[in-house]
Image (cartoon, rainbow, N blue to C red; front, side, top):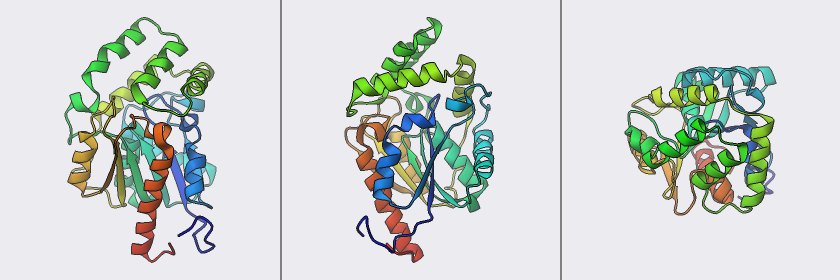
Length: 268
């Protein structure tokens, strides 16, 4: 199928969810990259409570509560369901909880570099060598630039324009600062969340990075095996795979989406 085929469906909506303390604008150019692979699709990046434009709200202490908020957000925006979810890290947990509790809402989920109980131990879900770094930044009251330099170093290997990315991330943190309390509440929600032993009903694509410095790639591999889900692995990207290689992510999503279409009888 070429990008300009007139028989491509025009009605699919993709909801994008970021991870711990990240906001919708941290997707950067990726929504444009995804839209280029899927012309006509509606792509909506939303914030979790406590992040981005919702930074003054209190972050829920549970992942299912975050999923409930996202469902309500779609209703407020007048976005019809079912939709596709594309989500990273903590956002992928939210997508999983949403798909498990309200499968009728979801056409399919793409989960990027996530980790969930009971499939992986805590020391693989967040690599221990970063514990001290994060604690030092929090304890010393790091500046926005210090925070974002550290986040960029930990989560990306080869962003196209690291200097520009850093400037933008510092601006976002200064404009919509996530409070330490909300960051802790999000971390607690992620640590406490336990995914279902069997896969939620909607189709799943799991993407992982072999060189993820934050989350061990085996977390995604175990999840994919347990759920018998489609799995693709990037050889060089960091945790923020859409930043390091958004073209690869979008291509994987499109291929998977096309396969779903051929199974369901949709033009592809």
